[in-house]
Image 1 (cartoon, helix red, strand yellow):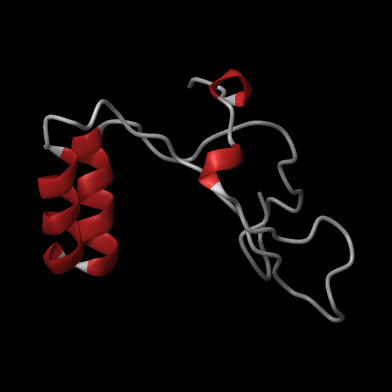
Image 2 (cartoon, rainbow, N blue to C red; image 1 turned 60 degrees about the vertical axis):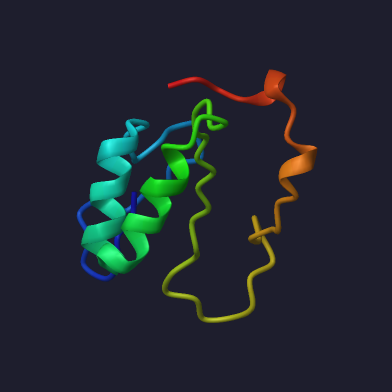
Length: 91
């Protein structure tokens, strides 16, 4: 995937893939590394509730190096109520 100017990876991955772990502990570590314990601790506390059965991740990529408005593959807003379990890809 293209990571910015001068990248040796000059393509965009249009296929199904995921970049993160689906283990809660690893996700917590990533949140803490990015935003700090003030963000990670409340997330972990909520995740550990008995009513939580698991987690799903939805990733969106943003375009980079834009020279004009985006007209191809624009970003979108996702209503989680529209995601069918049958459309999920387990990784």
